Length: 329
Image 1 (cartoon, rainbow, N blue to C red):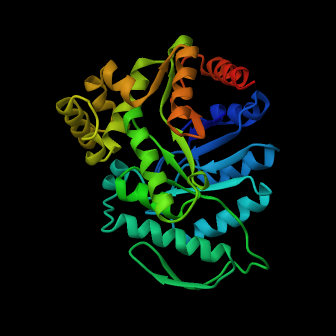
Image 2: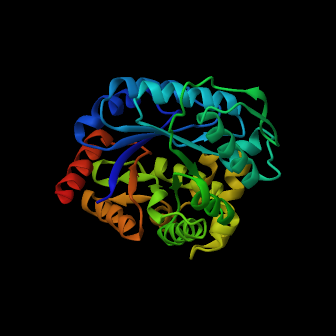
């Protein structure tokens, strides 16, 4: 059966973050993923450290830390610290970063696949105890070391979308966080598995984690918030991915243009129910759990519940996790 985790972002209110920290393990979930809202809200690794120190069983991961705005040595040092705090329960999720956020900062990566490959290679060398010198598009290290007495094992998970990025995940990552419509998820998992086989790895050696916006309408989930989140997801989805989908291309372009010009709220008016159904998981408790089970049948080993969080989301989360555990037996 698939694992169930809860997803939060650094831009959420601390009261919500604390409730999730204090209750998710008790509810029987398997983990928490913390996504970084670039230049918004709380500091990612501090949240991870707090959750690792206040839980005993579940895995906590970053989903993701964008390497475009963080020095690789800082990521490596944080990984070492969090691995020790959590006694091996930490998962390091990295990626380039959201398209819209990076564009606002004036950041353009010439070779994103190479940049991510170099980052993984450097992190693995540092975690193995090596001294590293690199000079790449994003990374600058000169004779840097973590001064380890013995190697450490930290799973590296990639948050990626495009075909070359998916191939990279299958080739060298320990896991991949996927988001997008079911049709895309199916193709993405196949791409990751194919790349794993090509690299002479077992398909199961790459964990497939699916993280979609979740909108539990049976507990008063807000449609406006759902549309805002979906607008951002559409805007951050690469064009080559959108072209694979059976969606209204003209409406998708209206959403992308509005978000790029004025932010996610501007895209709300163009998001209809078709886009919510395509880019999010919503509905009643049973409908949402059945969609999670569909993702499992596509090859996902872990699904992530939330955000957005609206209405009586605490009760909704509790009921959804209870239903999953009941079906799990």
